[in-house]
Image (cartoon, rainbow, N blue to C red; front, side, top):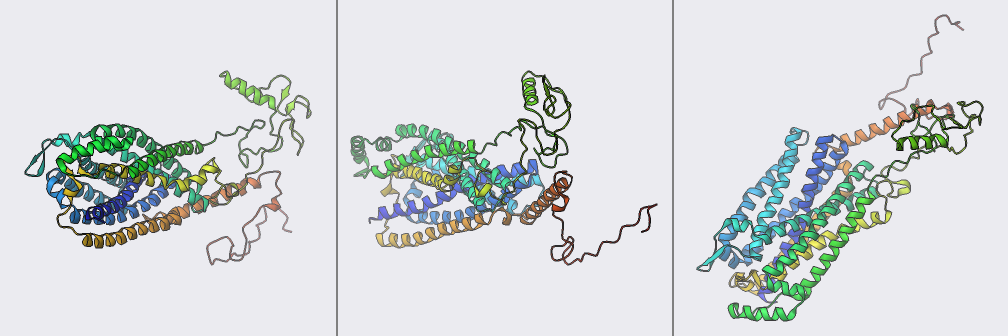
Length: 572
């Protein structure tokens, strides 16, 4: 391969890999900040588990992303000194601010957030993660301002072969940069949202997370994925039109007009010499695939939002709930209400009136038609129910962390969508990579459009042997880092929220879940004990001896002392 092709391959390998990790970092940090805010506002333990769990995955990806960024910086400084010498006065300020201010602010406040659980005041701790999120997106803005100049140079002058910026405001108001900022922000939110959807459903399927955690995670991911995909589609349409105006050569490639591409290359050859245009096949293929994935993600996101809507509570049409019931929707014998009373209540509510107890339609009583079971107002005999009335079943317990029968019906109404989303979380990564190919490969044969060609931007004197050796080293390094990132993410994700690495949320969460289960069981047994239809002998009781006896571990249960005789009772 020619030295120019080897240098471009190194650039694509390192920058593309770093960009994939950056999109997940940007997507997750926004969702973690929102989740932490909801935890502070509501105090719900489920939001704390979400904050620590998704925060752990964010920190892992952030750390590996730093390492891939170092590999990217190495190849930029080694292979592209022509770009640095020509445009240092333009790129120097934005990239310096991106590195010194945004990156260091992000790292500092991230450390405060990681070690601030249960140490910092809750609002100070919350402010830390929002500073981290703001610094991350600010860093992306500075980098894209520099990239926007490379795509569409504005407000510059050339002196002695060096670019000089004539208006800093023009650099900030470059439309090409800001359209890309919104486009990449939407792509990052889509990556984070569908990542949260896919991992949340995998946790639910394997029983590694409770329903509350899964439901909240799926809703958060569905909103982020849907709105992110919407922003990508809208900004992408605007960006496509703007690209054809600012970069006519790339626009001709995207239109598939090969004759126009040839004509423009001939015109540019008069100034820069023979040039090789952008590869039309890969650029058009990436654009088509990106647009198809964007439409699919938008459909999946809307479908997920609809499937995650809480079903409306089904009103028990033929029964009247009473205070003190042992189970919701399970009345005692004799507490049934006829169909006519429900019809009367529905009509009255529709007319804005209120139905008082005992107000029945003509010919109806509390147990059906008047006189069906004796005088009006009398209960039905035990075990017999009036006409149109059927008893509600007792609640059927399911497996912990699973839907009925292991299905996903308790967290998402569509089983088909629940099976698709774990695979669909790969699609936003593919779409972002395709977008990068269209933006960067489609810019060829220029590094700075109309000013600096790829050949001019390279380091003088680079040979094929040196570039091949450094390429092999970078391939091993980048592939190893990418594999490490995926392995760490998969390992931490499949542990579930109960074993989060941030804060000290694992033990309190487990203790809280155990306490809630014990309270629910105790309340159910206590209520069942008062149900006249339940034989008291069938109610489970705590063992009085053995390893499962009531009391602390190791404690022995003493025999119950005889009850003291009541005053006035016979001593025998």
